[in-house]
Image (cartoon, rainbow, N blue to C red; front, side, top):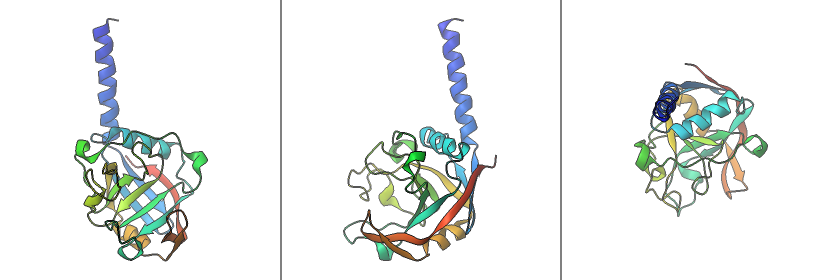
Length: 199
C-alpha cells in the first residue's frame, strides 16, 4: 500500500468515526426521571468521544447527580451560574486520564439552556464529571470569567428531552459541599441508574 493510499484510508476512518460520533444521542436514566441528550461529535469530537467511552464502559451506571448550583448558593464575587453536576462523584478510580480542553471559541458551541459540558479545574483537566446548564450561561464560554483562567468549559451537546427533570434536580435541597465551602451538595443525590446510547 502506498503512503498516499494509507493517508486516504486513515482520513476515511477519521471521517467515518466523527460522523458516527456526530449522530449519537444518549438517554440518562435517573431516579428523578429520564433526560435525553444530543451530542455534537462533529464540533467537539475529543470531548464527545471521551464521554461516550465512559458510557460504553458503564462507568456512569450507579453514579449520581450530586451538585446543584442556584443563584442563592454561590459566592458573591463570581458570576452566578445555574447548573447541575453529575458523574462518578468521589470515585476517582473509575476515571481515565484528563482530556484536552475543546474551547467554545473553536467549537462554536455556547453554554445555552440545556447544554451539557465537562467540569474541570485547570485547562486540560476534565475527566468524567459533567454538568447541564439551566438557562444561558455565557460566563462558562471561552472568555467568560466564571473560571479565572478565562478558557471556559467544553460544551459538547444539548438536552432534547427532560429539562423539567434537570430543573427539578436543581431545586432539590442542598447542604455544605466541603471542597467548595458552599451549600451546593445535594442532601439526597439523584442516582444515575444508567446512561445508554439510543442511536
